[in-house]
Length: 163
Image 1 (spheres, one colour):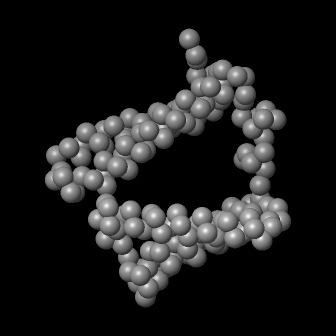
Image 2 (image 1 turned 180 degrees about the vertical axis):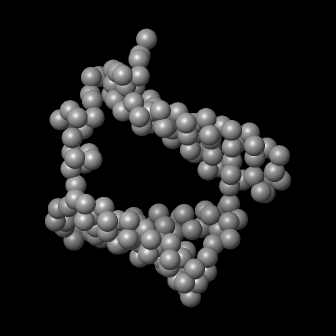
Image 3 (image 1 turned 45 degrees about the vertical axis):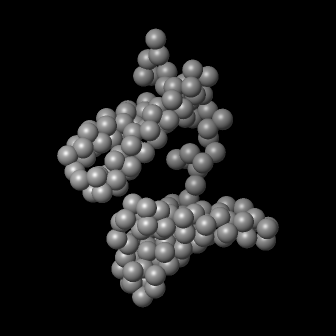
């Protein structure tokens, strides 16, 4: 039987299990809501529970393979790698995004945040083709998210100066 100490990331696995339980509780609690009112809570709670299960499965498989958080297979990108300046700039980009949501609107503020975070997180030089692909994919994902939340899930989105 798999013990918690043999899991790839025991703390992360425990937190993921908590999110699975929370997601199930929230889905159950949403059953008393109206059909339209329960769409968003059920969708996000289900996604949270499913992604928690995926993380638990990943950590168990990596643990069975003998891969630990400090091993060379997982060292790159871990807590010990990276820059505190980049972490601070990421947090500042997120704070700016939140502050700009009501001013500029959801889509425009999200695009600015996406590009700011992309600039902060890129560690190596990229070709023009790679940059163009990131811009196109980012705009497509943000546009799809905006349409999904405003038109399908019927969440009122901040409009601001723009759409």
